[in-house]
Image (cartoon, one colour):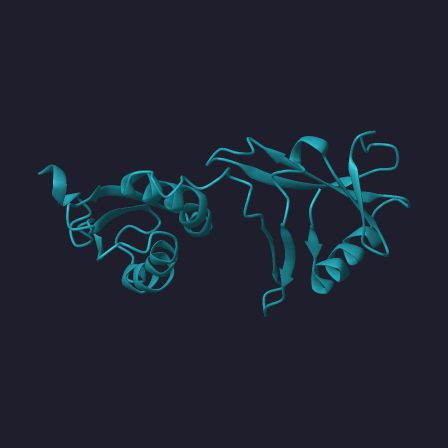
Length: 194
């Protein structure tokens, strides 16, 4: 297995959580549906003896993090971080290989944009109950997106769209010309299907 990084803030956070658990409890990291856009990571307490024989043990000092064998490739290069905030903080697990490999340079722009949406953007907006789908990629390389769920009719959409989503898309699919929002936020109806 390549490098799996647990940042010092995440270590402290886990160490604190483990204080309330029975002695000898560790943590275990596994993935579901690795290699697909729907991939997900689960991190659970691992009572003594519950780890699997073929788990990879990552020594984190005060505790051990067991990584399930079938998750090793997906979690190669992953970083577990804890960002503290006024409300407590948020644990984030960034695993570049989790959702499979990005389509190659020769894949259609539609495929590549869809992959970025599925693997990068939607997990990000899902925490706000939103979902972003690709409506079209025009011949001029303009990308038209549709916002659903919690993003729909949200005044933040322009900001979110311009900053986060457009930046990520351009970074990964540099030939995009414009990114536009194809949702009609005023009516709550989709203007494409009048």
